[in-house]
Amino acid sequence: MYLADLEHNIIHDMSFVRYECKIRDIPQDKRKKIFSLSTVKRMVDTDHVPRFNGCQYCLSELYTFDFQKLFR
Image (cartoon, rainbow, N blue to C red; front, side, top):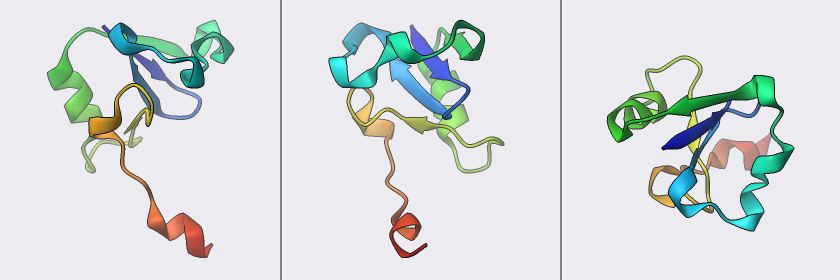
């Protein structure tokens, strides 16, 4: 099962949760459960609005760093 943080647009893998993910800090009304990996991959795709990102700690294979943030 996966958990989407609707406030920060980050998806967490609940089978590999780490302390750095800070799942407890996500408000209950900003959580969404996702049950399939294909749905997660569709949400991480660049054409999806809003664009979600994988957590860099527990879902690093779907994490992408935005290098444009360095120059803003």
